[in-house]
Image 1 (cartoon, helix red, strand yellow):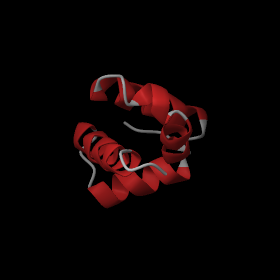
Image 2 (cartoon, rainbow, N blue to C red):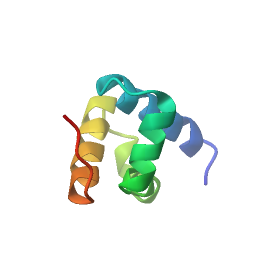
Image 3 (spheres, rainbow, N blue to C red):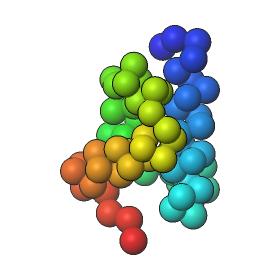
Image 4 (cartoon, rainbow, N blue to C red):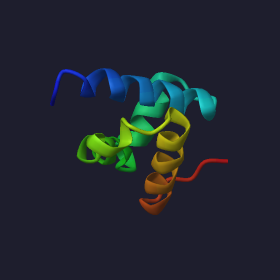
Length: 71
């Protein structure tokens, strides 16, 4: 993992949690369970160039495709 990936992952987890009123820990666990973190790591080169809102939208799609449900 590169030197800029970890801060990006941290920011994405925090932003995801804020959007869905989750704690950072709950957001991390949800993203890990539904393959959102793996997606961010694999596609970092593309995702870090988008706005955080677009990244969160992409995460939501990936997680929903992997069984994640958010109200």
